[in-house]
Amino acid sequence: MDEAARVADADEVVEGETLLFTVRDDEGDLGEAFLTRLSDGSVVAYRNYCQHWTDVRLDKGDGARVTDGEVWCQKHGATFQLDSGYCDFGPCEGSVLETVGVTVEDGGVYVDDGEYAFEHLGPGGVDDGDGGGSRIDFTGS
Ligand code: FES
Image (cartoon, rainbow, N blue to C red; front, top):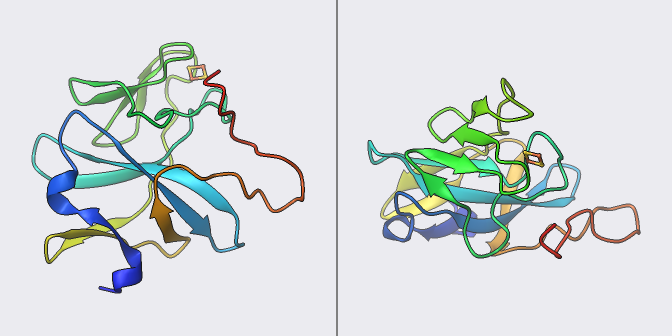
């Protein structure tokens, strides 16, 4: 794999936690995503926004709330199954988180997605390409 696509060492991605990173889409815009590990040991990644209010981040920079294989939106309590991204409770029930393709290889996790390229570890969805401000609310609301 291309080392520029390496997000983290595979052993940094643990079950019950999320690891925030930034991607650049094929139009050059930045956005956030997070990695997590499933109970079967596989690693998945999703874009870091709720399907109810898309300006609400699931991982606000210090890890999302994850319990029993589900990630919670702390705004209104929606829960999303981490193995599928499916929302099984809350105001956006029936919706699905947006996947970011990743591959685990040689002890690392790599972005492997035709639409997204790895940008850097940590937050950063501030470049929305329209010359305006951030579409990500860093106040935690
Ligand atoms: S913003 Fe996530 S449940 Fe409402």
